Length: 314
Image 1 (tube, rainbow, N blue to C red):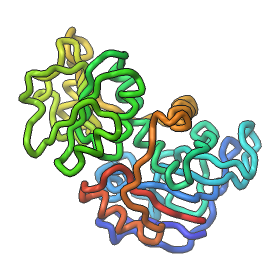
Image 2: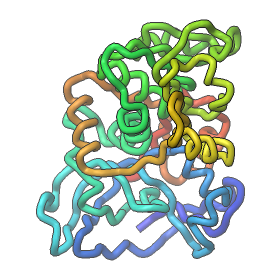
Image 3: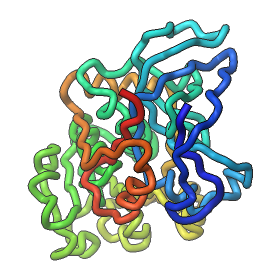
Image 4: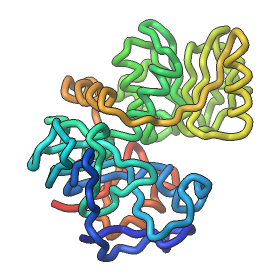
């Protein structure tokens, strides 16, 4: 099979499109013909070596967490799928989706949303699961609350705005000037242009501040959080790690770090929202797998609106 292999840590030139052996599945896995994947910031952070303490130094490595494709064969313990099924889901850490075939644990796959193409479905898992788990599990989101999404036009942000609205909250989205109308179209009740206004200086207070792009610290956001408000970020800085521990044991405002945990139940929940028309996908650009390096470079530029899809096989 063809795959985008990473033969060391570094810039985009460490990614090479070449032949590699097809994965051998375990009893609880599916062999999936990958039709599409997508780029998430964690992919190029791994490539740069920022997570090497977790990923190690065993090369070559195939990155990519998001998968949409067709089941080719199933392991002896698999009960929910059979060859020919269309699925979407996640690979195990540290990836494996940037290839023509991938081994996917059964508990990380569900039937593909019927109203999405493979490329659209492949943009959902990691980003939408991050948004859902940040708001529901960490933020304890409740209908009627006020929620602010910083980075509302980004890969996680687009899903956070829509999920927060689907759960009955009043949503404020923070984005650049050119994306104001786009974020409104996602359902935001109010938008803030960060080039003109700093939301942390506002008089308005929120139940949840979800900083999807990790540009504002807990300390900066405390003044716009309600007394029992929750701040959630995606970046595990030493500061937020300390604050999350301290605030966990103190009354009042909380600082929390979201670490996406793929699972069947949440993937089904997102599938239901998508099929009901309450959440939609947004693809900024689609790159073929041989052009993965260019896709990573575009993601690193932080100019993408929504997600970057990777077309693998037709």
